[in-house]
Length: 147
Image (cartoon, rainbow, N blue to C red):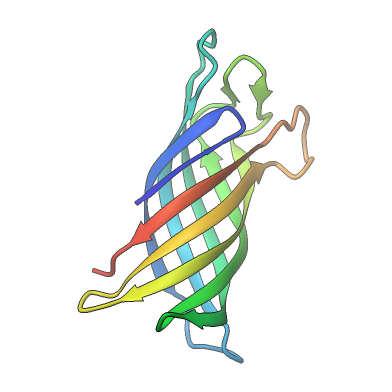
């Protein structure tokens, strides 16, 4: 589950996160697929909602251990497909295809059912391949439980 806030938008979504092979020099390679709603906070806008389907392969590197829990850094780049190309009055995406980047920290909580808590900064834009390219940046809190 994910919830967050950023450039005049709120985000709520669900994701599937999975490992991609084995560790390499202590780096864990992973990927996630997320379906999320970006809800605009502009009270005058007619276009207040975009659905985003996102796939991001990412690397997770150990940073330290805090009170017996592992803290990791996450970094990745992937793609997003948007249901609309405008949110709020002013924020326009020229295409439904977008790039997505994440940077964040994950705390593995452990326990009988090992869960994790992540704080992520994410940016979605088309990388300048077509204009306008307003993009959107948001911070989110992610709680993960394995199935």
